[in-house]
Structure formats: C-alpha cells, structure tokens
Length: 326
Image 1: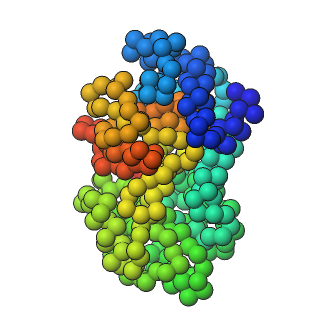
Image 2: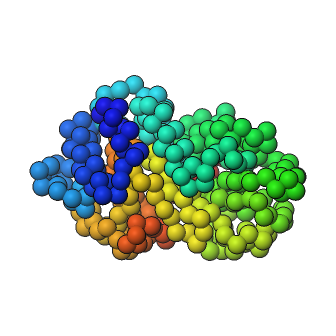
Image 3: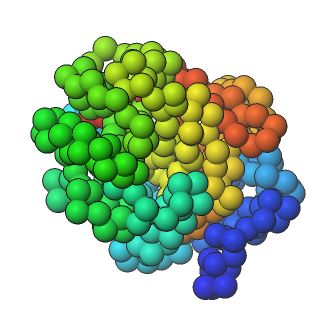
C-alpha cells in the first residue's frame, strides 16, 4: 500500500469505511499467505465478499500459532502478549513503528485532547522492564509526549504515586492515571484520595493475580475511594494497533478506522453489524498483519457502533496484560 492510502486510513469517513475495508481485504487476501489459506479453508471465494459482514475474520489464536504478515518485511517492532507460564504467547509483527504511533496518538488526542495537556501516570511495567508490550509502548510514548516532569511509571511505589497525585491535585493539574485493573485495586485499597482533576483509566486484567471482580464492582470500588463519578477504560490487545476508549459505564467508542462487529460463537461466518455475541474487530491500522480479527471477547455492539465487553467465551485463553509484572 502506498503512503496516500495509509494516510487515507487515518482520515477515513464513516461512509467510506466499508469500501476501504473491502479494499484492505483484497490486499490482504493477495499478500498474506496465512489469511488467504484461512479464507479458502472456510470455502469463501474472494469474489463473493461484497460487504464487511461477509469478510472472514481470522481467529485471534492464529497470532500464537502462525506468523501473520501481509507482504514480506523485516519487523520494526515485535509485540508479544503476556500471560501465565502455561499460556502460549501471541506475536504481532509490526512493519513500521510510525504506523502504530500514529494510530494510538491520533485517537488518544481525538478523545482526550493533546497529550501535552496531561500528566500521564502509569501503573504498568516500564518500557525498559518489558519492551515487547504494545500497551507499555503506548504508555511510554504518551508519557514522552506529555512532557510533564511527573509523568512516568509508578508500578512499585504506591506511596510515591499517592503523594504525586495529591500534589498534582493541589495544583489542579489534569492527570490520567492508567493501569491494569489489579494494580489500580491494590493501590486504592492502600490509599484513599479525593480526585477532581484526575482521570482513572483501567485497561482490564485481573485473572491470575487476585479474585475476579466484575467491571461494575471494580468501578464502584475505585469511585468509593476517589469520589470520581466515572471510571474510564481502554480496550486494546497485542493483536491490534488501535484502541477503543470508554469514558464511563463500560461503553467503548472506536477510532474511525476501527469497527466492531458481532458473530455467533459456533458460526464464524454469522457476522452482524450489531447485537450480542462474540466480537469481531476491523482494524485498518493492521494493514501489514491482518485487519480482520475474531476475538474471544463476548459483548454487545450497539447500532451507533459503540460496544460493551461482557466477558470471554468459554475455554478461551486468559488475556495476560494483568500479568505483565510477573
């Protein structure tokens, strides 16, 4: 794909999303051996795909068992999922680091404004400790872009984080505290602090570290310890180069170049634009891997394109971003 097309991805209009997705489908069918064989094995003919709901979505598990690349290239980045020692790791081979940076920076700023307006505090492993995590890479770049002296990783020092938050609140400095769920719960169990100028953003992740809580329980607890009315959430994964954000109540909004559809669990081709089922994701930023991912997340997609994650389908692997500190 040429530079003009890549630029068009990040400026796609709602009315042209479907045509662009079909163009990407044809490109990846031709240039991605793994995806092409998967489509053929489903018995789907390329010529029969005329709408996004007819596009075959590659099971996310293929990132564990195959090298998912569109075109031949040397990877600028290789992101790896984290998980238990029993879990098989997913790998995402990224052709161009600037593609990922543009995706997460542009969408972040569309939702939250300029990153330089914020102090970014991260309850995540630092980039130096785990340099193959896409989540940590994103947080590290946002910290850098914020240019605030207090921005950084605060994983192992809850007292320092508490005193930093307290001082920033007194200064009325806008803050985003982003963290995996178990770490946020650990922090707020130890410290109660009234927050008025801080957004708390959880990225999910509980299993293997502490007793499982529902999203509603997590948000209610953090609200009780902070006085906040809303808890924000980020939805992303190793296999995607784009994210969705929720500003409260667990309802996510996608980037313009990302769309979430829904399928029936027992029929990979039963794709609908809205309803309840298992989530399929179109991520056009995945132009050099696979833009059509069948996840293991169950949820509801609403008619306006927003979506909610309900849980995971039975027998699916645990997503391991909560285990990055192990």
